Image (cartoon, rainbow, N blue to C red):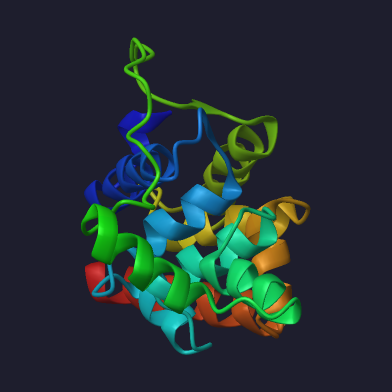
Length: 189
Protein backbone atom coordinates (compact mmCIF):
# COMPACT_ATOMS: atom_id res chain seq x y z
CA UNK A 1 0.00 0.00 0.00
CA UNK A 2 2.86 2.42 0.77
CA UNK A 3 3.85 2.57 -2.88
CA UNK A 4 0.65 4.58 -3.48
CA UNK A 5 1.56 7.16 -0.82
CA UNK A 6 2.66 10.62 -1.91
CA UNK A 7 6.01 11.68 -0.45
CA UNK A 8 4.34 14.01 2.09
CA UNK A 9 2.02 11.22 3.27
CA UNK A 10 4.97 8.85 3.67
CA UNK A 11 6.77 11.53 5.63
CA UNK A 12 3.69 12.01 7.86
CA UNK A 13 3.68 8.28 8.68
CA UNK A 14 7.42 8.35 9.37
CA UNK A 15 6.97 11.40 11.61
CA UNK A 16 4.13 9.57 13.38
CA UNK A 17 6.63 6.83 14.22
CA UNK A 18 9.06 9.46 15.47
CA UNK A 19 6.34 10.92 17.70
CA UNK A 20 5.51 7.46 19.06
CA UNK A 21 9.16 6.84 19.92
CA UNK A 22 9.47 10.35 21.40
CA UNK A 23 6.57 9.50 23.74
CA UNK A 24 8.17 6.12 24.44
CA UNK A 25 5.17 4.27 23.01
CA UNK A 26 5.67 0.85 21.50
CA UNK A 27 2.65 1.32 19.23
CA UNK A 28 1.67 3.67 16.44
CA UNK A 29 -1.93 4.77 16.84
CA UNK A 30 -4.25 7.40 15.46
CA UNK A 31 -2.85 9.93 17.91
CA UNK A 32 0.62 9.55 16.43
CA UNK A 33 -0.73 9.82 12.88
CA UNK A 34 -2.42 13.10 13.86
CA UNK A 35 0.89 14.38 15.24
CA UNK A 36 2.68 13.22 12.08
CA UNK A 37 0.29 15.36 10.04
CA UNK A 38 0.76 18.35 12.34
CA UNK A 39 4.56 17.98 12.14
CA UNK A 40 4.48 19.30 8.55
CA UNK A 41 2.91 22.75 9.02
CA UNK A 42 3.35 23.66 5.34
CA UNK A 43 1.30 20.64 4.22
CA UNK A 44 -2.35 21.16 3.17
CA UNK A 45 -3.70 18.74 5.82
CA UNK A 46 -1.78 20.54 8.57
CA UNK A 47 -3.05 23.89 7.26
CA UNK A 48 -6.63 22.60 7.44
CA UNK A 49 -6.00 21.44 11.02
CA UNK A 50 -4.36 24.80 11.74
CA UNK A 51 -7.58 26.49 10.66
CA UNK A 52 -9.14 24.80 13.69
CA UNK A 53 -6.43 26.10 16.00
CA UNK A 54 -4.30 22.95 16.04
CA UNK A 55 -0.53 22.83 15.89
CA UNK A 56 2.13 20.27 16.79
CA UNK A 57 2.91 21.57 20.30
CA UNK A 58 -0.77 21.79 21.23
CA UNK A 59 -1.38 18.40 19.64
CA UNK A 60 1.36 16.75 21.70
CA UNK A 61 -0.04 18.27 24.88
CA UNK A 62 -3.59 17.20 24.00
CA UNK A 63 -2.48 13.64 23.17
CA UNK A 64 -0.63 13.26 26.46
CA UNK A 65 -3.63 14.65 28.33
CA UNK A 66 -6.02 12.32 26.46
CA UNK A 67 -3.86 9.31 27.29
CA UNK A 68 -3.85 10.27 30.95
CA UNK A 69 -0.11 10.59 31.16
CA UNK A 70 1.48 12.54 33.95
CA UNK A 71 1.93 16.22 33.36
CA UNK A 72 3.84 18.79 35.36
CA UNK A 73 0.79 21.05 35.64
CA UNK A 74 -1.27 18.17 37.07
CA UNK A 75 1.47 17.33 39.59
CA UNK A 76 1.89 20.98 40.61
CA UNK A 77 -1.86 21.43 41.08
CA UNK A 78 -2.14 18.27 43.20
CA UNK A 79 0.77 19.32 45.42
CA UNK A 80 -0.50 22.91 45.71
CA UNK A 81 -3.81 21.52 46.98
CA UNK A 82 -1.97 20.17 50.03
CA UNK A 83 0.21 23.26 50.47
CA UNK A 84 3.38 22.24 48.65
CA UNK A 85 4.97 24.60 46.10
CA UNK A 86 6.55 22.32 43.47
CA UNK A 87 8.68 25.14 42.05
CA UNK A 88 10.14 25.87 45.51
CA UNK A 89 10.90 22.18 46.08
CA UNK A 90 12.57 21.88 42.67
CA UNK A 91 14.67 25.01 43.29
CA UNK A 92 15.82 23.72 46.70
CA UNK A 93 16.71 20.26 45.38
CA UNK A 94 18.57 21.66 42.35
CA UNK A 95 20.45 24.13 44.59
CA UNK A 96 21.67 21.22 46.70
CA UNK A 97 22.14 18.47 44.09
CA UNK A 98 22.49 20.33 40.80
CA UNK A 99 20.31 21.16 37.81
CA UNK A 100 18.07 18.35 36.61
CA UNK A 101 18.34 16.35 39.85
CA UNK A 102 14.60 15.63 39.79
CA UNK A 103 14.45 14.72 36.11
CA UNK A 104 13.57 11.15 35.28
CA UNK A 105 16.52 8.92 34.49
CA UNK A 106 16.90 7.94 30.84
CA UNK A 107 15.00 4.79 29.94
CA UNK A 108 16.90 1.54 30.23
CA UNK A 109 18.49 0.50 27.00
CA UNK A 110 16.13 -1.83 25.21
CA UNK A 111 16.75 -3.65 22.03
CA UNK A 112 14.85 -1.59 19.47
CA UNK A 113 12.05 -3.37 17.68
CA UNK A 114 12.79 -4.04 14.10
CA UNK A 115 10.94 -1.48 12.00
CA UNK A 116 9.90 0.68 14.98
CA UNK A 117 6.50 0.90 16.64
CA UNK A 118 3.73 -1.26 15.20
CA UNK A 119 0.36 0.01 14.09
CA UNK A 120 -2.57 -0.47 16.42
CA UNK A 121 -5.76 -1.92 14.93
CA UNK A 122 -7.19 1.61 14.70
CA UNK A 123 -3.98 2.85 13.08
CA UNK A 124 -4.16 0.10 10.45
CA UNK A 125 -7.85 0.83 9.88
CA UNK A 126 -6.99 4.50 9.37
CA UNK A 127 -4.54 3.52 6.63
CA UNK A 128 -7.17 1.37 4.90
CA UNK A 129 -9.71 4.20 5.12
CA UNK A 130 -7.14 6.62 3.70
CA UNK A 131 -6.71 4.27 0.71
CA UNK A 132 -10.50 4.10 0.30
CA UNK A 133 -10.77 7.90 0.46
CA UNK A 134 -8.15 8.20 -2.29
CA UNK A 135 -9.74 5.57 -4.54
CA UNK A 136 -13.17 7.12 -3.93
CA UNK A 137 -11.81 10.36 -5.38
CA UNK A 138 -10.07 8.47 -8.17
CA UNK A 139 -6.76 9.85 -6.92
CA UNK A 140 -3.61 8.14 -8.09
CA UNK A 141 -1.79 8.77 -4.82
CA UNK A 142 -2.70 8.83 -1.15
CA UNK A 143 -2.14 12.38 0.08
CA UNK A 144 -1.95 13.65 3.65
CA UNK A 145 -5.54 14.84 3.30
CA UNK A 146 -6.58 11.24 2.68
CA UNK A 147 -4.76 10.25 5.88
CA UNK A 148 -6.72 12.92 7.74
CA UNK A 149 -9.96 11.63 6.22
CA UNK A 150 -8.97 8.13 7.32
CA UNK A 151 -8.48 9.38 10.89
CA UNK A 152 -11.86 11.09 10.88
CA UNK A 153 -13.69 8.16 9.31
CA UNK A 154 -12.11 5.65 11.69
CA UNK A 155 -13.90 7.71 14.30
CA UNK A 156 -12.97 5.94 17.52
CA UNK A 157 -9.29 6.54 18.11
CA UNK A 158 -7.41 8.89 20.38
CA UNK A 159 -6.98 11.35 17.49
CA UNK A 160 -10.74 11.87 17.19
CA UNK A 161 -11.03 12.17 20.97
CA UNK A 162 -8.33 14.87 20.94
CA UNK A 163 -10.11 16.73 18.14
CA UNK A 164 -13.43 16.57 19.99
CA UNK A 165 -11.82 17.69 23.25
CA UNK A 166 -10.39 20.68 21.38
CA UNK A 167 -13.90 21.59 20.22
CA UNK A 168 -13.33 20.74 16.55
CA UNK A 169 -16.47 20.25 14.46
CA UNK A 170 -15.52 16.92 12.88
CA UNK A 171 -18.04 17.19 10.03
CA UNK A 172 -16.70 20.64 9.12
CA UNK A 173 -13.11 19.38 9.33
CA UNK A 174 -14.02 16.55 6.96
CA UNK A 175 -15.68 18.98 4.52
CA UNK A 176 -12.66 21.32 4.53
CA UNK A 177 -10.26 18.40 4.10
CA UNK A 178 -12.22 17.07 1.11
CA UNK A 179 -12.31 20.58 -0.38
CA UNK A 180 -8.54 20.93 0.04
CA UNK A 181 -8.02 17.62 -1.74
CA UNK A 182 -10.33 18.53 -4.63
CA UNK A 183 -8.54 21.88 -4.95
CA UNK A 184 -5.17 20.11 -4.88
CA UNK A 185 -6.28 17.63 -7.54
CA UNK A 186 -7.33 20.48 -9.83
CA UNK A 187 -3.95 22.18 -9.33
CA UNK A 188 -2.09 18.93 -10.09
CA UNK A 189 -3.89 18.40 -13.44
